[in-house]
Length: 374
Image 1 (tube, rainbow, N blue to C red):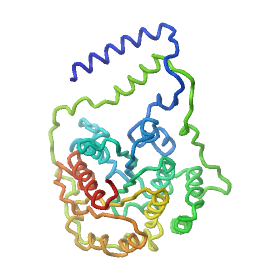
Image 2: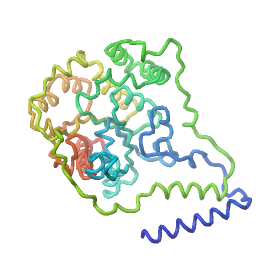
Image 3: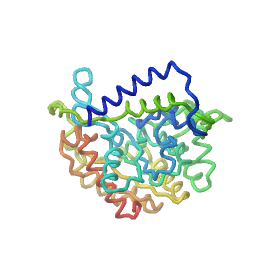
Image 4: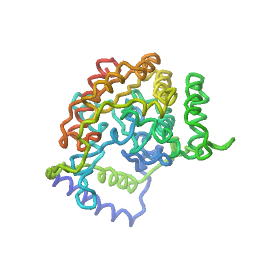
């Protein structure tokens, strides 16, 4: 299969070089020029969000599952070498198909549910505010299911990530959330909890960014060379095979697999005393419900907290659970999911492909149990 694929690519390259020397007549009729753009399955940054594959016309009629969160959700490690030893002294082995979303797509295909596709829109280091912006940007695509993975209380750290937002982006988020009566009150309290330092609050009248490239744009014809360029782009993204397994080693200097003492929730209380930022999860849930769609929040696996019954029970039944239950936000606690050190979680927080597959399978089970995915 690999040999035939290489031969086909070589033939297309040779043919493509020759096509560059001749004038090709239009081949097909009117089409959306976005079909020929190079979209990415990785998070492209908030300023370039429109280049993410979820915006591709290819998925216009696909049922969408969107993953939001930070690196523990984005986690694209195919094995332990993705992170340790440092990249300067070891081969990095990472690919988007190794993420939780990528593994869910494989499970969906195996189950014959190819009409669904999971999209990875988690962002390394992201707190809740940038993810609210990300959701606001994709909301017009009407994702059927949005899943947020949270490594509590990461969502509220660094002022909920407000410092990473540009004024125009915050202005856009304020316009979307503040302009929706269903969530405007929660968003107002959210902003008040973050405070109003000059470094992130946009000046009055700051215009939101323009997203013209997200909209359909048509032209009347294309050529064979356009099709070939598009073909080359798709071939370049293919993952032909997994390759030989890389050696697995354990860094004895790491403290990632030590068991932490009972978590002191006063740390979380200082970050978000009124739970106004935490209510941001219910904002996504409310907006999803408004479109007849679904939302699921899950607390991510954590080796250091897997035996901390107080931590787990507080998330399941304490004030955080009470707020979510009161707002009718579906949530699951996967903190104690028994992922094996190194092989399934390479540092106790981020997963290898094997660990991501376990999480994807668990999420699918819970989506079906809750009748969120049929």
